[in-house]
Image (tube, rainbow, N blue to C red; front, side, top):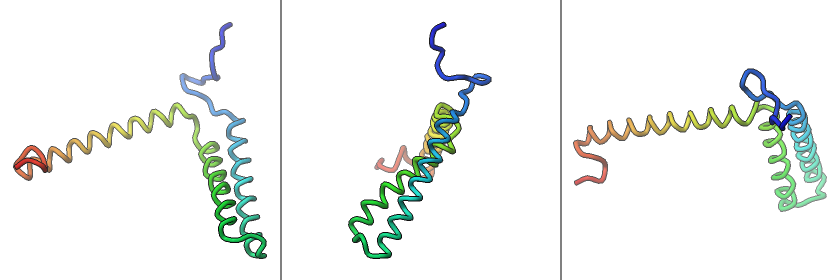
Length: 111
């Protein structure tokens, strides 16, 4: 049998438990790094530049871990993002049309 890709369930991608588990591990690692940074700064072991150097990776670990653990599957999120972008574009087009009619011209730059 040829490689059929990731397992599917009713035409949708299933959640990957390994990715969810890895996401929560990233969150835990980011929280531990953040706590270690705060404690190290409190006892005076590191200065402000080093705090920023440790806080940024901690924040990125927590953020990336939450995204990986919470998002059900990338394909569904991509579809929702695409549809939201189309809705926003349609709404902006309507607003521009309404504003141009209220100004009596074809747009804000007409004379």
